[in-house]
Image (tube, rainbow, N blue to C red; front, side, top):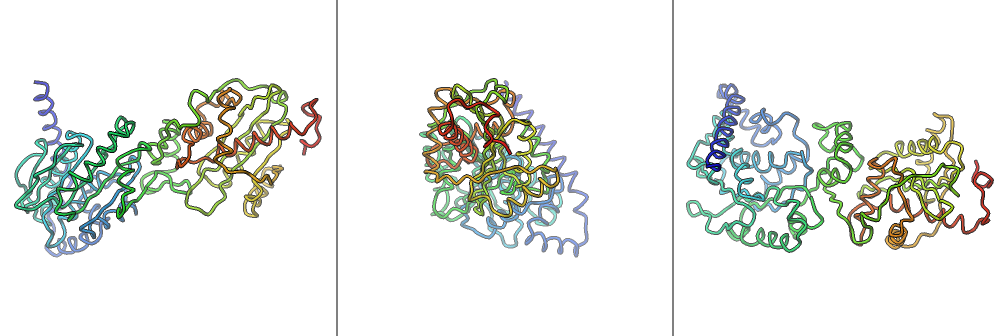
Length: 503
């Protein structure tokens, strides 16, 4: 009884969707033959024009470059093998599962599609199929221009056809796809849409089983590989079906994060920096990295969540020494490292208090600003500022100088000439300090972006991990400077009496 009621509700919602599509497109269908011919010629070759012309109800923002590139790749490669790893909110399903097949069908002398839509469950796949059927049967302008009419079947049964002989099928993850045929043709377009989920990615054996299913039973529905095989989703776990298939040879793999390597929105036509910052603040950096940056942070094998402690800090004058250390990621690589700065105080009992932490993929000017926040935070308490000497290039120093001239105070930053051992070994060596409770984060800033980034990078730190490690690197360097400074100083050190700490 409950299932019948639910199906009735879904049917009513689908009919309402069809009515909205029809209302949005019917007035556009009544144009002259000349206008129609021009429109068809343009939209067959220009994906953005196709989207904006036939889907005004979906295209509320301009089509992004990465969406156009993906659509053209799939259209122009009838044996496309692709993984589109796009952040949440970047219209993966809208473009690849819905508009792309309709663009293929809009081409002159197209081959009818036998398309299989796969998702984490058949119900999820049916929902995607329902959106596609609604457009194919209710988009009046599309039907008028390309002549593709209604066939048989309904999305809620998991299968329907169109008048040109195309067939569309919904399958759930792991469901048997064998024997899918239409008029003697085998499948020629497979879209795997958001196949991973939070439960699956925690079970490596299940991930492997689903990956094998995709590359065997599902792949085998095509005629010896003839056809398009596309996976779309975002990376929600270190071990995932998306990640496994992306590593296969011959697959075209693109990664689209909400923020680009310069910290700007990738889909700038849709998101502002302010909106992205608000999302990040609201959900926290850990979830932001997972959902919007294809960078899932999981508890690693070295640093554990239980060993990351927050607590009360001392009055600044009670610390034996204060060090602010910066890793500026001043590199030309495309890795897009974080800039990171930490302020650490050493207590008389040998504890390391992380008073402030700053971390982001951002501009040098923002990083310089962190140092002035630290300066305001410590007031007239003696402090030493460090940065790796090989990063202290003229352009970076010029930015410090420029900001200093604007505010009337220069930050006396010193180059660190330490011949550092292997980064992994250095950071790993901090683990006993965390385990013993010798490193404590400032509880007044718990939840602050900088501390969240530091915590996430520590938790994700392990050999071979792709998680950034810039803040743990800065923290290790600050701890080294503090411990080395104290080892070489008078054991009767009194805060404020050591001239070498004054500027």
